[in-house]
Amino acid sequence: MSLALAHKRRVLAQGPAVEAKAVPYSSSTALASPANAQKHLKLMEAALAVDLERVSAINSREARQQLKRDELLPKYQDYVTRYIDSGVNHANPVLMQVVVWLFDTAQFEEGLGLARFAMSQGQEMPERFRRDIPTFVADELIEWAEAEHKAGRSPEPYLSDLLPWVDGEWQLFERIPARYHKLVGILAIDTKEWAKAAHHFERAAELYPEIGVGTRLSGVRKALEKEQKEAAVPATE
Image 1 (cartoon, rainbow, N blue to C red):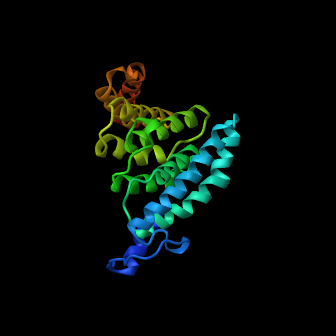
Image 2 (tube, rainbow, N blue to C red):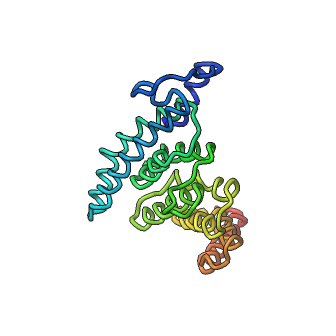
Image 3 (cartoon, one colour):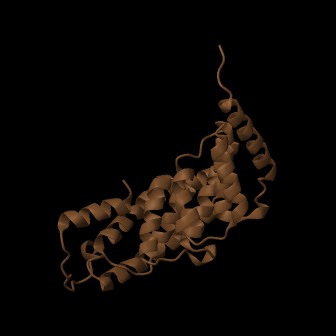
């Protein structure tokens, strides 16, 4: 279950929130008020800066991923869970770094849930990314999905699940949703779903004409026409 969904269920179970009283800062009250939350955030940011340097010092991508997945994510996810439960809303670079690491380590279900929570709070990506959250999420997932397909593995269900968001809900550079439609079309060719493939290739070309689906679309249309003709011929004994 994602952190954001777990938070929603806890809020519903607890009923209407009551206004928190000011309390002295301590480890147990670190997120009990906005003021305490800011103090605690500074401590977490200092720890995160040290851990980011640790990650940067590692040359091996596999070793970096292992560090993020096995040590750093568990370390900071506890803080993120408490931040979500607190109801506090402030700029939170630690939360956003957890989102980044979840996508880095292909933990998409939890990453998507946390990214949507971050968007609901108006959070921003770390400055070095120069992208908003929807663009980061869409870019990361399609890069992974294309690599998975190239390696002979299925990128589903994440590819199709995110498609209505990248082409409908989020305002993105048109090439991004076009890449989604192109890959869904390619997967449809693999299963000989010609009508589905044609639909997604046509949408890809509509969004971004330079996406490069012309040859595939022509072949799919021929296959679809042949299929339709064969279906129209009565079976003979």
